Amino acid sequence: MILGLVYEAVKKGARQQKACEIAGIPARTLQRWRKQGIGEDLRAGPKTRPKNKISEPERADILEVASKPKYRDLSPKQIVPKLADEGIYLASESSFYRVLREEGQMHHRERSSPPVHARPRELVATGPNQVWTWDITYLLSSVKGVYFYLHLVLDIFSRKIVGWAVHDEENGEHAGELIMAACRREGISRGQVKLHQDNGAPMRCGTFKALAETLGVLMSFSRPHVSNDNPFVEALFRILKYRPEYPDRPFESREQAEAFIARFVHWYNHENLHGNIRFVTPAARHAGQDREILARRAAVYEAARQRNPERWSRSTRNWSPVTKVVLNPAAGAVAEGAA
Image (cartoon, rainbow, N blue to C red; front, side, top):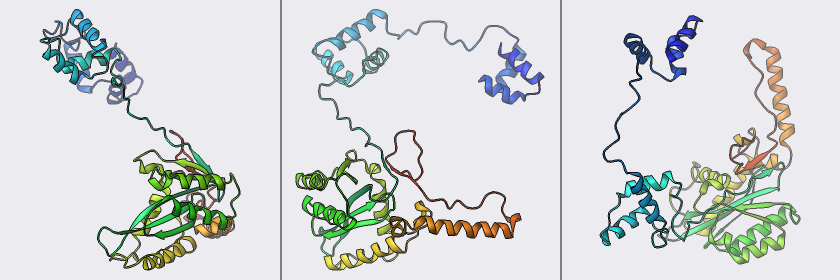
């Protein structure tokens, strides 16, 4: 049948190599078949039963033993040695695994199932002060083993740092004070902003949760030990620590660390042209000025195109505003500004 199909395809103008690929065989196999003539399919595999194959009664014994109350919560690695202690040998561990897998019985066999953490719910921001994310990072001090802790809150839509503080320790009280100050400064009303964070102790602290509830801030949490669930602020910390101005030596005092972070925040918010928001500053986007800036850029590019149309093979650069930013998009979703 394959020989006939490939012959028809080649006769109608198809390349033999391509026809063989679609048929799922190498071209050399096709040539060998033509020389041998159409006969028995030599790829059918062995004609005899393997001598070491488990019989149906043995297979039934494996399933029966693995389902007994004393063994049903154990893995084959536990079952086989226990059977050997009783003077019984049914099959190897790999055979146990294979039979149980074929019967769909290789789900978690212990009573204490491992915890399953669901992916955080998708958070969508179409304007500033809708979704914030925050985290804490270490800043080295001149005393070995002692750190300063930068607490930082980021608006994912504008990428603006809306709050920060440096402390000698990390705890829920400092976190609560930071969020309260940011809400007061931005004029946040109850239920307006969703706050995403990881599962650190300050984030799960009862004091912090109670304060967030009082402020009407809706909480969202990353999965334990999954940094990818909080990508915006993690990327910001990387920018911070890879800046050329970042000190080569540890900070001598908390005041010195605060002075450096203040300079960084001013640069980041008011001077840095952020690539993920069409190269406008976070402060300009937070204030709603990005549309006017991008419209002027689009006009400049269109004027340049009109002057020299031969230099533009396609449309001009995309200077349209990013209208939606998604944190932890649903599986398979592709959204503008997603992370």
